[in-house]
Amino acid sequence: MELDPQQCFDALRSRDRRFDGRFFVGVSSTGVYCRPICAVRTPRPEHCQFFPSAAAADKAGYRPCLRCRPELAPGWGLPDIPGRLAQAAALLIEQGFLDHADTAQLAARVGVSARHLRRLFRAEYGVSMLELAQTQRLLLAKQCLTQTTLPVSEVALACGFRSLRRFHAVLAQRWGLSAQRIRRGASARAQAALELVLPYRPPLDWSAWLEQARALALPGVERVEDRRYARTLRLDGPRGPCEGWVQVRDDAGACCLRVRASVNLAPAVALLLARLRRMFDLGASPAAVQERLGELARGAPGMRVPGAPDGFETLVRALVRREGAAAPAVLACIARRFAPQPQAGVLDGAPPGLQALFPRAQDLAGADEAALLACGMSLGGARALLAAAAQLRAGLLDLQPWAPLEPTVQALQELAGMDGATPQWVAMQALGWPDAFPAQDPALQLAAGCADADALLQRAQAWRPWRAYAAMYLARQAAPAAAPAAALRPPARRPQVPAKAPANVHGDAHGDAQRLPEIRS
Image (cartoon, one colour):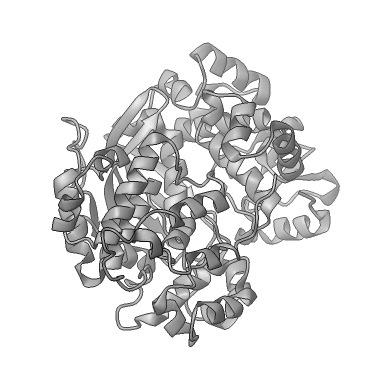
């Protein structure tokens, strides 16, 4: 990524939060690198060197600022295809993929050759994948040391270091710092829960996000109350599965989300933070979105594309929403029948009402079709859900941000019982693709004043590469009396598919898929 020094310095001088996380500045007179919003006195231009990533600044010999804390900078996603491939690899690295695999396996997971990914990655971030992984581990450890009272040994293991000795050695070699110096000044009181901070670029329409969550909040699994969102979680940490709870509230003055999480999730803290960033779409650039959408987004800035902690959960919710007004009851019935109970003690200290976990793919893969029909699902929805669960359990389908876009959307469209718009909603919310667009959703067509999907796709060309956000605004307009609770409204319920005639369940779903940008290796 090429950076214009003058533009970067202007952003640094104005401390513009829109550029937070987009670049970092190394100051040669101090040997420290900072975020562009750092509150220290602005350095002289000749002392500034600008980097596209914290890892690039790290590689150049700078150490992180202890005041603005570069580990808290929000990420950001690129709409172009090479940028998306590099971003997918960075997401995997952020979640600890290279703690247990090598770069060849990472390239295979993203779907390109190792050589091609190395070239794209260095062009995008200015460093190698291993260098970025090392910096990610260090920055995450710095955040844990500053914001929690976890023992240093637990911090080292949770952040991907093989041993405490190795952690101390890398910390001293890369930054010239010790764990004790980083922790100096942090709260020494014992914590009943992890307390973390997730910054974002303002604005964030927190009320809209809460209304979207409240519309299909699952009793026992989620709770929305007092402008806080809480839920149970299951994460696959480096030392095995972790179960616990998390509670999130918005601190608009500090432009961050305040997170309280169960200490049981500490071994998977890297994955926890990555999932929460995706869930609340904290890498969004509201100013860029509003500029592109124009009148559509005027008066309601800060809309985000919400996600879920797990891609399978996103798919279940998208399919259940096809049942219209009955969706909450259907979802609650599925949870009662299939949701596993957490282990004893893992929900100690949780907000009231949290007592169950969301079902996993393996919990539903072998379910009886009749059981889902008894919960109120349509035949098509039940078939699509069971087929997806079986493929996820077998490893034939992946619904995470690093999954290749076109093959994943194509695989969803080919599931028996799948409609045309749901794969696009999944691409928006689970795959994190900002240009996904469910044009076959009748509600969006009505809100946009378009007669059919083709007309809506034609109009949506002006909103690229942020069509996913346009879909959120259109859905909000589609039901003004219930907005923003209806912002994730799916297509109308489809007629049940006859048991012996599943061949026509796709409708014209493939038409929209062909309009997605092609990812090439």
